[in-house]
Image (cartoon, rainbow, N blue to C red):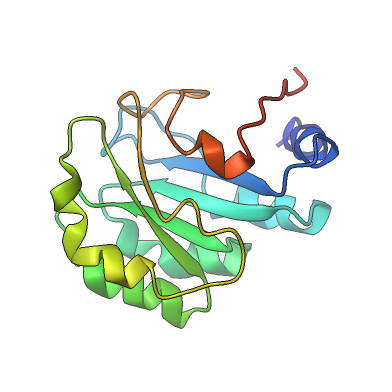
Length: 159
């Protein structure tokens, strides 16, 4: 948690409004990152919009935890076997925006049955409703096609 406040300040000072947070469970992707407590600790320190990307084998089991922690958008993957439509509905029922993510080799048509579900909101920047990772997830600071949701700006975060 020590570097998160400085990193979120650097993001805000760069004029960006979103913070994309990759949550990894060590199952769906090989690495383990952090859980809802980090979001809860960071939430009072910044007004940035939290897009919480759940790279989890069972993301539907964690929606409420991340919502209570301060996520404003929860992005889920279509690849694991879980009730995707119901999970998107639950995210929306909690008042959050929802997004879908695809691994590099997942065909876009895998997300097509759910596109209407993620397109049912307006308001805050909605460019991140569907995105595809450029590399297989599981390691920090990997590139993905979601970069345009940050206005295409590239910033250097403090060490």
